[in-house]
Length: 104
Length: 227
Image (cartoon, rainbow over all chains, first blue to last red):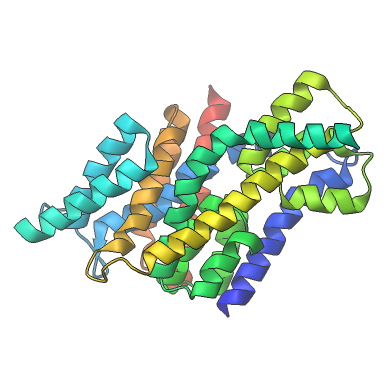
């Protein structure tokens, strides 16, 4: 699919969701279960992306100390946990990866 | 007339503290989108066409990974589902507006515009000019997002090619996921999604991602229901 078409469809769906209840007010209630499920979208989607990025190398599970991206990712996890700062987390992770690539 | 402008500016002012965090985030998005292989125009335009921070990062990552278009669109939809909640939450206060206002305000309805507006609406109830506050907050955020994206693209283009910048996207996601891990169901959702993503990595069309995300959402929801 063309990248512009992807953006257009993604944008239309996003707009549709923002518009939905403002437009249809009074005809629908958000079900309790959906309300609850939405809390788990960020941890689920983000982890589903991060885990393979850190743990899979060349199509295989790489659960060892030679996996620089895993080690640098763990450094980033620690920094993110203690600082809650996006920019610091990125800088720490990238810095760790550069050093590890140099050392290993 | 003056009262409208006053309320509009109150919205802009309420948005200011949030812009401090949004500006670097927009710059990081711009730099990374370009680095993920999106064209200059696509990187910039995504900020106004999709206009939803985390889903833009994820779309850039998936485009970088050459995921199929349908999977990318579906992922954007799942990540942005929460906007329906914001829509439902603000709807009672906007119900008497003409449709053109509803369209405009819905387009501007982001996490950061929602937060101060919901606080104000809850405090003051339905007021005839309250929507100008959301317009002010939303427009302040929209402008900041466009400018910071542009600056990020500009800076991203001048960074050395040898840096492992593609790694910055997963790092961004790590930073975003940490504050969401507030309780056991959320941690279980993250771990189960991650595990399924590893196990289902070999599935075609990046379907493992969708499967993993749905598993995590299900696990979190069921665990919370059992408490």
